[in-house]
Image 1 (cartoon, protein in one colour):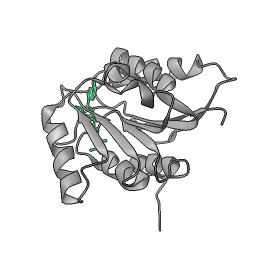
Image 2: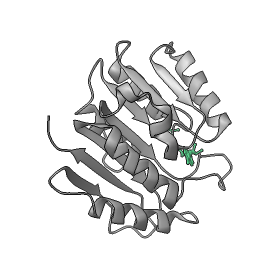
Image 3: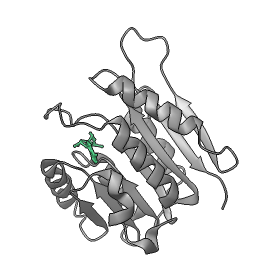
Image 4: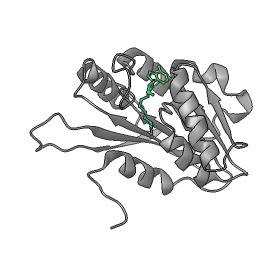
Length: 194
Ligand code: SAH
């Protein structure tokens, strides 16, 4: 079996892979332990570039180590900054030129659960991501509701995507409606055009 639809993060990566190719520019808005950053860096190759953000220094270090273990260094820029300042840190020449942006929300597994993404900063980051995104590109958002603040964040994201102009953006949504526990959901935002 190549991919499992019930594993949300691999589903996000699989979807991104349909759009992203060698030489492209990508962004990991919540790099954590670096798994998505590594995936993006390997997908865009040495002629592409990946920007990675996390507010935790430990997460940035973990991402750097994972990249080093995989012999990747030159094509990734890591920022120990909140993703609500994406436009400030990503150089203007890359604006409107990013093909894929990944959000894996919530808290870092096996870490301080009080440091987690939140509705206000996530929506600010999504707004900036829609500006940074190249036409034809996509944003993936994995959202978790099981922790404190998760429901508010989910509601805020739903409201955000609902209000995007349909002539410019298409939205896809993957959910698991028949589970007995609060299941995560995946949103995909596609910027129309070429
Ligand atoms: N994709 C990661 C897991 C991400 S977990 C992996 O594959 O390992 C969510 C991450 O979001 C955590 O590391 C947390 O520190 C980070 N985070 C929380 N608030 C943030 C913010 N405002 N800006 C950037 N990162 C944030």
